[in-house]
Image (cartoon, rainbow, N blue to C red; front, side):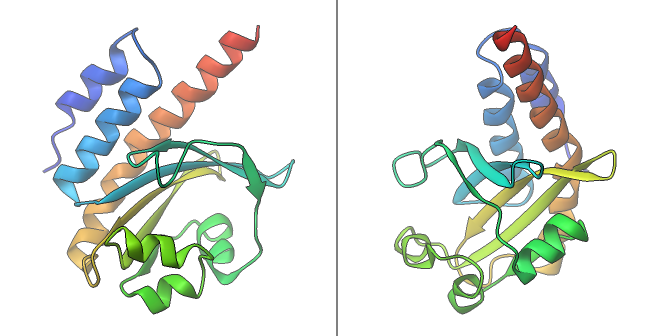
Length: 166
């Protein structure tokens, strides 16, 4: 059973948000699923863009601006069908991600992308990368437990952005 205690504590704190909650989600992911590279991407379908807002490796994968949402099989599966995407070798990653060489240079050759869905819409993804063959069916099932805390992080981020903009 997944222990959400530290995540809930981090979510409740009034300091350093949404960073504290996202850091706790990263730690929860590390403990329950396992991860080397961990990022979170938000999606704005009206604007047609995606943006990374969290990374445990900001030197290689910085939190930065936006990029166009692509229309690949990955997008169909994750963004439209709301299903987890898994690739367990660098070849599978290379088929859907242009930055596969950077991914491999970080010691990562497998990926699991977990869509975070609210009110029928994907608002973002939790992206976990590890060594080749790492994301077994058992680990992918464990990744399902990240959807709810992920949704809390996305909603907290949105709330803080709206509060700061007001």
